Amino acid sequence: MSGDSPKTFYLETFGCQMNVHDSEKVVGTLLQEGYRQVDTVEQADLVLYNTCSIRDKAEQKVFNRLSDYKKYKKQGKTFGVLGCVAQQEGEKIFERAPYVSLVCGSASYRKLPQMLRQLENAPLDSAQSPDTTLEPPAIGSIDSHPSNTAKGGAPSVGESRDSELATRNSSTRGSGLATRDSLIRITGLDDRETDACFETEFTARTNPHRGYITIIEGCDKFCAYCVVPYTRGKERSRTSASVLAEARQMADLGYTEIQLLGQNVNSYKDSEGNSAKRKSFAELLAAVGEVSGIRRVRFMTSHPRDFGRDIVEAIDAVPTLCDHVHLPVQSGSTRMLDAMQRLYTRDQYLERIAWMKSAKREISITTDVIVGFPGETESDFAETLDLLEEVGYDAVFAFKYSPRPNTPSLKLEDAIPDEEKARRLDVLMTRQREIQITSYKRYIGAQCEVMIEGRNEARSQYIGRTTHNKTLNFTAPPTANPKPGTYAPVVVTGSFPNSLLGELVV
Ligand code: SAM
Ligand code: SF4
Image 1: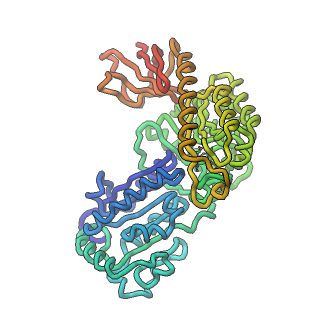
Image 2: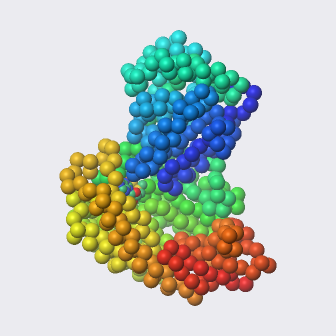
Image 3: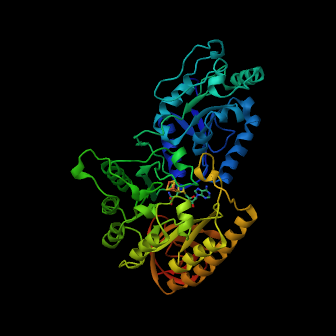
């Protein structure tokens, strides 16, 4: 570290819960490295964006942020792009946003400490030392302008940038990060074939009651529309021993709810060295649910192909496992599922739904749907609408198909116009809303235990979450004053399409 004051960083996260949790680990790593987190870009020496590219909207947001860079370039800030857009766009980001110094995909996060040190220790005036190699073989490439722009994929780097950088550097003196007279480019992009996970004891969890644990990273399924296998790399699981150690540590810290995370948690393959001790996903789920102090365990997302009956049996057997399964179907048409390379048919999907419906406990089921995949006919779409009725989902996350770079579906013909995708999305969401209006009424009169998440002062209501993952807003007498993170019984008095209303049982 150079300078007197601690190095500061600002991190903004885009996208899914996986990304949010990755950011908790990145923040923990930075804090451990001596950085201090700040709330605005203006206050930060290091500005990081943890990006998502699953749909083009998320990606656009990131590039909008990057377009603000010019505003900050004279302030000597260092910029980094992490996550899926970083992996997908790679060194092209340096062309689009020349002031970015770090581009790192999620498969390389475990090397962040080294990369941060390289950022800090980048030699002063390296523009005059073109032969200086900053690249440690294990990490990726560091492109120290201007000698290797061709290799670095930033052919337009020019003198104007140098002078801009010189300005920037003069204003960084005194901050924690090293000052430099050249463009520093550090990449962590070469680890998608790794077997290693981002295991860190330095996770800065933002929610004091519900903690997330990644059990599996990457994906090997290669659905025709999806960037994840290209951005997050190959599927790799943590050992059950390491997951359970983290769960116990969280329980010791006072967490009562754990959510196991992965692109497909139920594709989990224990990498425990001792084969006798290896656990299936259902066994791991049950073991986490049995950790002393843990009252609720959730898991997200499950892939239908790998969804076994043993998961339902575990939910039935272990009271702490929540009564909720998110099982994305994507389409109700087997023809479309085949085109999407989803590895299951409509009937196989419905078989899994039947297992859940025959459980001893009522399991709430939610899903993801993509409308307007290339070649989706009215009749395919009608099958999806029909499936909504048949399953009776408690929530549906529906998306217009978004063509993604490098994915096989880019080559498919019969693209559906955007207006038609929007129409189908609207029809689907309207239908699902009607289903939920009816089905949420089933809870009226029931008593549910909620974990209290907070209070809505404007409505004088507390916000709770049920085991079925439903928001249950409730009133309580002033004397009760229930605290966030505690559990309370609430009787349901009303229902809306996406939430329930109730009163604390006193
Ligand atoms: N692994 C999970 C599965 O296979 O069911 C899904 C994970 S994916 C990160 C989250 C959701 O984003 C998917 O279920 C899908 O509905 C949606 N999604 C992924 N790629 C998409 C695309 N190209 N266009 C629209 N939606 C997409
Ligand atoms: Fe993407 Fe399919 Fe993997 Fe899910 S299973 S992350 S949709 S490739």
